[in-house]
Image 1 (tube, rainbow, N blue to C red):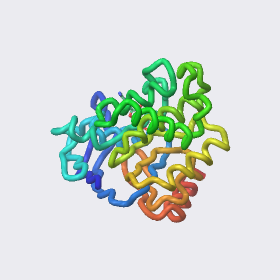
Image 2: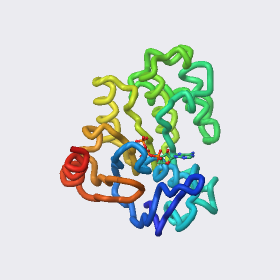
Image 3: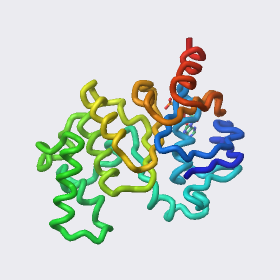
Image 4: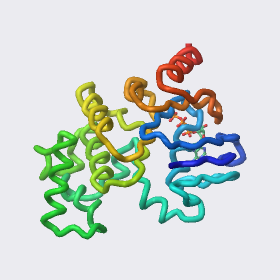
Length: 224
Ligand SMILES: Nc1ncnc2c1ncn2[C@@H]1O[C@H](COP(=O)(O)OP(=O)(O)OP(=O)(O)O)[C@@H](O)[C@H]1O
């Protein structure tokens, strides 16, 4: 569960988030809104990549700004630019790296890594150089390397920007099977239309917060 209590944030004195008070308890939550409306900043507050200038963000009972490391262990964050996340030379090594802090043996880590790669359609690329994957494949790898650690909460900032239609459909199917709480920032409205809740941001405020059909209709009217 994620709670925003009267949260505000400014960059260099320019306010980008204001008066955010809400509790995110649903399993799958989408955040949509115009460019620059504050969505990424809101997402980054959840794993303390950004700390609020005012108010508090509480993640599973823990103040994110005060206990960054504890919160980051629970929140997997997926960046829209996968190059920020890919570290190891090969695809399988990159996934295995995510598992180094687990008590799994080397053989178990390799088996878990291969399972997640096939779930994300990358089984045939396991031993390929990670940096030579296509942009979309890198995005899938970045997703797989977070999901393999089974965090309690997954926050994804525009996870489908580089994916073709088949891969964004595959991601949609994978997301539908997850037990983790999921918060997705996106401009891909189809991705969130079967979510439990959609939040619409505008100029740093929440302007709609409802089931997808209602919230997305309001967003479409706003942008018309
Ligand atoms: N690190 C930063 N330093 C200064 N300004 C920033 C920084 N990050 C974001 N901003 C500004 O804060 C505002 C909100 O940005 P944010 O990235 O949260 O919006 P967004 O809704 O995710 O936008 P988009 O849909 O374009 O990705 C924007 O005006 C942006 O220029």
